[in-house]
Length: 220
Length: 220
DNA sequence: TTACAACGATAATCAACATTATTGTTACAC
DNA sequence: GTGTAACAATAATGTTGATTATCGTTGTAA
Image 1 (cartoon, helix red, strand yellow):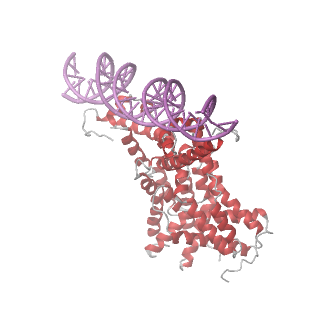
Image 2: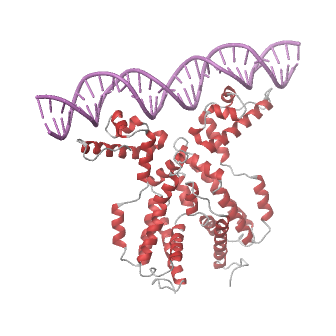
Image 3: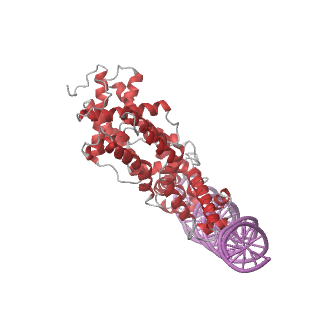
């Protein structure tokens, strides 16, 4: 990604065009993959001529790398807001919410396509795999750990132990359905997603109880 | 894949060459993907001229489809033998064996590469996803179900219930590690694989116990 | 041996696509 | 208004790789 000084005479127009290019490229790459997307059609979808496209990016590889890297960042605004909002509810509810959200995201169409593209181009861009794992999965694991470290029920437990039960929580959200989705078979039902999240949450709370903590809502 | 009558004058030579072509193509496609494998290099690796290659297959697409379809069939001979051998041991041992074997296969380098190729070419060949899921995953689930239906401990239980606990067994063998492997990060340790298989086996036996069956080796 | 079809080697064809060159137009700062 | 640099439109270049054509060679069945 080429960039100019921010006080360039026509910086605003160029920034707008660049944004259009990146957006169009992301859509194209995630939808049709690297080989399936032509520079000409990307330019057309961005409402820009091909020469303008090449004034903004040095090569197709550069454009691709930039797009995928940005697409792997899960800094979703509305979602963050919803999470903030949910933080005050009982732990069980929060876990359920996180569990459902994570599954919907990891198996949603955009992530699915992105994962396929990353797997295809992993040889050409060796760091893409780690990037995708960190952005699409690890980020959630660490976010949960950070949350648990602030939560009354779990703030004073050994960090290692906390990390493990958090990790196991996500572990239980992954299953055969993930292979089904990646391979283009039918996506799991909403009820199936919910049930999986319930089990994972229940198990985490049971672990806390085993540690002598009081999760509050377990069968006696 | 073109084929000739088996009583063709030079059928044997041609069959040998065809086998070499398919073998070379499978190796190339699984290693380098569809776009990454050239017809010329496939021919060279098969020890055959490019024109001979084209006398055996109509087009690159045909060759690819044939190769992937055959590669998704998990009819492993030595493995079947090992399974037959293990069938007489206690159920817990058998489950452990199956659990370890399944994980090693599903996350092994060949399957991993195959899955990536399938995901890449799924748009071009829409049935590939189902093919891969059936061959690489469903086949194991159904094989376990068939086995359980012959096993004394489980032969007389409702088929639906049996199917479910068998399915759940594999469900527990899948986890974050699968994403890690698909994305090219470090593969899970042998010990981690074993531990996961143990938990899955334990849970299956616990379910049986809950049904009022006697698995034999559970903590009281 | 002999005829024939498969084979090998190599060049030719063909299309797709990334990248560059050319040229005239346009929008913005001054 | 005017100059300048980004822009659009289009053609040109170059490469890659699949597929085909040509033609002389060779193995095999009769």
